[in-house]
Each structure stands twice: as C-alpha cells, then as structure tokens.
Image 1 (cartoon, one colour):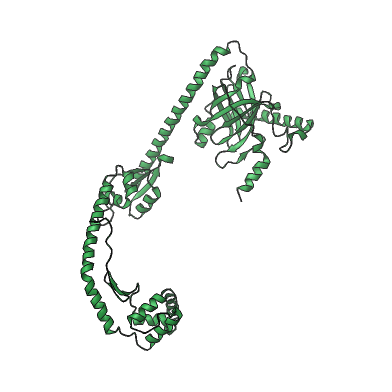
Image 2 (cartoon, rainbow, N blue to C red; image 1 turned 90 degrees about the vertical axis):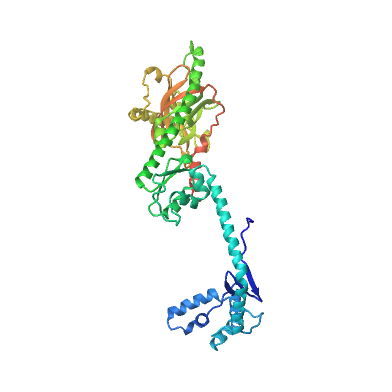
Length: 471
C-alpha cells in the first residue's frame, strides 16, 4: 500500500456535496429555520443578553458563502452577483414569510441520492484508511524500537515513550510499569516536564549542570529527587576530576620550567625583571565563591617602554590589566594622570596621587593578613620574600555582565618566593569579593605581547557603557 494518506471521497452535484457523510453546499451545512430567525432578527429575542449573543454570532457567521448556501438549501432565488449586504434582506424576507420552514422535497431527495451514492466509495476509503493507519503504526513502532537510549525514545516519540513506561493502553497512569525513577540526559526538559504534569502522580526534576543536566522522572517524589541529587553530586565530582587533571597538566609545565631555571639561578641575584613571564594562578577565594576553574586563571607580566612593568590577567569572574612596580608610590595610577590628557597634570597632583596610593597600599597591608587567614593559601611573611615584593594596581571587567571595575583601591602585591621569580604569593583586592589571596606558578619566561588598555576602563567609558545598557 502507498505511504500516501488516503483522500476522503466527495460526492458532488451542482455545488451540493457529501463528504464524510455530511451534506453541504460548498463548505456550509444547512441551518435550521429557528437559528436563521435568531441570527437574522436578533431584536426579536426577548432578553437583552440573548440579543447581544445573537448579534455577535451573526457577525461571525453571516458571510456571502454562508448566505449563498442557505438560499440554495431552501431553493430561494437570488442573483449570483449580489453582495453580502444585498443577500441578507433576501434571506431575512424568505425566513419571515415562511419560505424556510421546510426543506423542498427535491432537495431532500437530492441529499438522499448523494448519500446513497457515497456509501460504497466511503466504505472503501475507511478500509484503506484503516490499513494505512496500521502500516504507519507498524513503521513508527519499528522506528521507535530502533532507538537505543531512553533519552532518544523520549525525544523521538514522547507519547509512545509515555505509553511504554508510564501509561496503560487507555492512556491512564500505570504505576506498575516503571516503579523506579528513570534518568533522561539531554532531553528537552520543558517538553517532557509539561507532558508529565498531565499524568496524575508523575514527578520530574532535573539534576546536574550545563551539558550534563539530566531529567529524572518517576512516581515516587523522594526517589526522583534523590536521583537528581545523586546526579548533581556525580557531575560535580566529574567536573572536579577534570579540573584537577587539567591543573596537574599545567603544574607539570611549571615544574619543567623550574628545572630549566635552576641551572641559571646559581649566581643570579633577584631583580624585578625576573618576574616577567606567564603564570598560572591558584586563588581559592574566586574559585570557591564563584564556581570558577583555577585551570583557567592566568597572569602575564611584561614591560613597556614608558611605564615599566605591565600585565594582564584572567581570574574567572574578573579580567583586566595591571601596572606593577617594586615601589607602591611609583606605580602609574589614576591619580597621576587625568583620563583626558596626562601631560596637563602638574607635579603637585603627581605627589598627591603617589601619597594617596601609598596610603591605600599601607591600609591594604594591614587588612590583608586577617582576610588571608580564611584562605587555604597562607602568605609567607618572611623578610626575604618581602624583599622580592612587587606592588600592583589594576583595572578590568567582571566577566558576567561585563561591568567595568576601576575603583581607587584595586591594588595588591606579589611576593616572589625565589630569585628566578618562578612563583609568588600575594593578594589582590577585588571590589565585589574582597582581598583575593593568590599563588602564581610561572610556566614561561616569555609574556607575549601585552596591550596597555588602561584607558579602556576609564570613568568616561564606564559611564558610556552604563548609559548604553539602558538604551
């Protein structure tokens, strides 16, 4: 049998027709005379609300094809070229004078004859349709049976999936089919959830995160929710294993770099240039509080011809640029030059700015130890390390909404732990988090090109973007 759906037969005669056992003129059926009176004479009804309902029904019903059909059904003469507004009074007058009280005999006989002629082709159509439905069902069942996973089945044919696992043949809930919860990773959760809501007692909830989000479905609410919680724990464990593996791979680069540097350090004394290079960063304050992966944290420190040490960084929730110096008062900072024209500032302003930064740095030093105690990384306070201290000030963006961060107290320091500058410990103030304790591990002495985009994070740029977000 052809895959094409059988077409419903139609028996026709001069505009009249029978389709699926229904006698019509065109697409319209015959309307009884009482209904015609209600639609054509709504003011004749006794109650106001009935009149209003009749007017609304007439507005939606009385169109030219409908008028033409009713006139034909009752054999009322009219002009085919007449408009709707011309046909309404013709039909109303016929109804009022009783011409529509009964269907003419010849039209009743026409209806009977058309229906008699229709029986045989209609029966054949019903037989063909039953075969077509049966064949289609068999093909769809075969296609469904070939699906490998529960998720594929739910996504491929949700109704068939529901009948297989949760409903009886009549479509009613069947708790005996699947007593334990099912896991459906990767399905369209909203679609499955919406379908499950229509089944009395069936529960759904999702567990896990991101691409590992999994829908759990079953009859026992506690069991379903426990399943989802266990999935969440396993997904987090997998994520942590992946993070640890990535971190171990990166740390192996650091260890290789250190081995290569040991032969060079011998007689080499510490100098600030030794801190140049690329570092991976460990920062529990931003990892744990913001669900970031430390394998993605990085610093790059280099030089430019004007401002000495510069750098850029990515710490998950925040990224930006840094200016660095062994002398806190000598770091280029917001007070030492205006955003418009740094050459226009006088020496007094520079001195005030340097003093201000030094004051902030001193204040931060007093605060940092107390906050650092809360972190798993303990800053070493040896005199030797403090001699290798490099101060920093930074600007940047938080990576969620992209909002500029350029507060005056965004400063910190790095204490390098050896003369080669292969690792450091330090702190860095992040406005929305507080003092973040850092530990950096060098993986390359080459920093690559670092663009000094300090002015991209100015107050003017902040205001421009703030306004832009609301327009």
